Image (cartoon, rainbow, N blue to C red; front, side, top):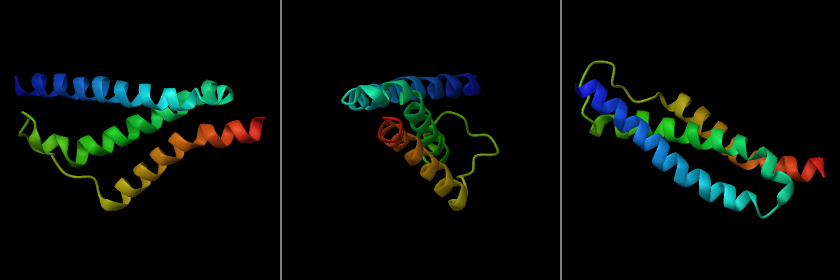
Length: 99
């Protein structure tokens, strides 16, 4: 039962928090109409950041208490967060280059 509750919790975190952050980011991307077609790249960046946040913080406050609950290694966290920031700022760079 705790696994099902944790899966529902994960879905809610990603849908609600990801949707909210995606909506904010998409409003920022609308400032420049040329980068709107690349907003999906920024949304992937948000999902990467939420994955790191879940694995390093949220998983320890949930219902599931089974084995395999470890934080991501520091290097993996750094690479994923760097890729996340790159994905979030890449539409701006593409908008400048593709003009």
